[in-house]
Image (cartoon, rainbow, N blue to C red):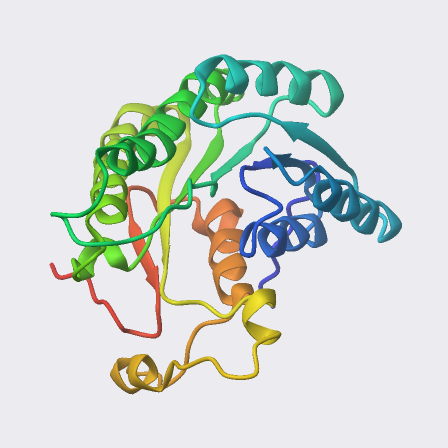
Length: 254
């Protein structure tokens, strides 16, 4: 039986207190990785998650930083290296939230925030953490993208622009660092059910589900499972991919 064993690995997950990030963090920890729980505002949730993992027998630290600022990411690298060691796994999950509207109405600052949190976060994380991976001769660098990058629906322009720019960075980076045993991949969730959705009386998602071949919305655990696979030895010969986890709602073409 195949088994995902991340024992001895160190993982940093940005946006780890978010709806998807917290499940990724729990999952990588359950697979045996030591985890660095990144947050920027929600310190209480980060500490709660750390306690939860520690009680379960895992190892976790919290690390704060603004992922749009290179100095903050450099400081995160120093803290994680000192307290856990150099990460073998980096998951770029954090993104700036904003109000979606049409291209004609969307403030320019929203395009800037998406470029900073999708593209520059990834660049800064690569600059800070990949050199140590090169030294080890192995590593996993994962970006959380979105099905929206393929859909291009109305009101998605800033988000889509940021994520499509991110896609370009990851594809180039995969070619640049592959010779060092480092894989670079993206997981692209569809409209995913998370803890917040489970608390709602009505989800108003029937129209969306009708378009999904598997006739359901994905769960946060589905996304975490894809991440766990891609950071494991099972995916050691997979790099440069954009992997939708959307029940077939989007299908990249060859």
